[in-house]
Each structure stands twice: as C-alpha cells, then as structure tokens.
Image 1 (cartoon, rainbow, N blue to C red):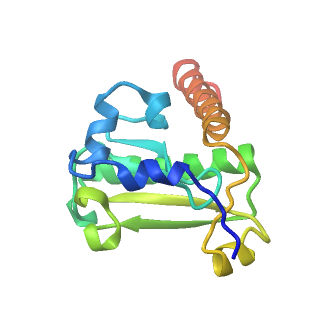
Image 2 (tube, helix red, strand yellow):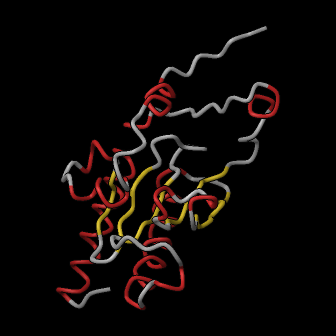
Length: 172
C-alpha cells in the first residue's frame, strides 16, 4: 500500500471547531492575507478556501451572519452576485480555467459552517480529475495556496483600481 502525505490537513483535523463562525470572525481580525480574504465589499467579501478542491477555489460570503438565501436583503443579494461575476472574470484572466463549478452552502447539513451561507466557485480544467481522488482518495492541488492568493489578490486590487477610476473619471 502506498501512502500519500498531506500534513497540512492535520491543521484542519486538530483545529478547535468550537470557536464560533469563521465567516463572521475572520473579516473582523484585519488579517486579510493570513485569512486569505481577497476582496471586501460593503455587504459581502471574497476569500480563498484554505482546503481547496482545486487551485483558486473561492468563497463569496455575506458579511451579515445569514442562514438562508431568502433572508438576504436586495443589497446583499446584488453584491454577492456582483462578486461572483467579478471572481469568475478574475479567475479566468489569472488562472485560465476551462470551466467552473459554482454552488451555495445553506445550513450545516448543506456544508455551511455555523449556518453562515456562502457561495463556492471552483475552477475546473480538462483532465483535472484523475485516478488520485477516485482510487487514492487524495486530491492534488498543483500550486501553493500563498502563490495563488498573491496572484488573485493582485487581480482583485487591479480590478478595484479600474472600477474606482471609471466611477471617478467617467471613463469606461
């Protein structure tokens, strides 16, 4: 039998899960790089998944602790959808995926930690699934999380600068 080592998983396994809602706590800490927060809006934010299914696996999350999609107010809904679109655009330009899986986690049994709904964006490439997850129950992520964070953070910063210039100068 072959063993594949993924020592980074031990952090997740041993982590104290009773510390509260990570989607409420992480933005308040002001440690965006450490917490993999890429972009903050008024009503929502984008962060990388620390335990990704693929490179560039992002989550779009409302700032307000909200358990159900229908409880979002119109401003939260709009910003969540806008951040989904921006995230997809920036993932396309930064990582060149061939497609995406997008889903929303609602409720604990739906995968939403502490009942804080959030959207997942998982970039996909032709051939990104092979025998490893099927037979070896192991997923290979080819780029280090910090490198992907830096690449995507730069893309979000550039996007925000362009958007600010368009609003301020009236240029498109």
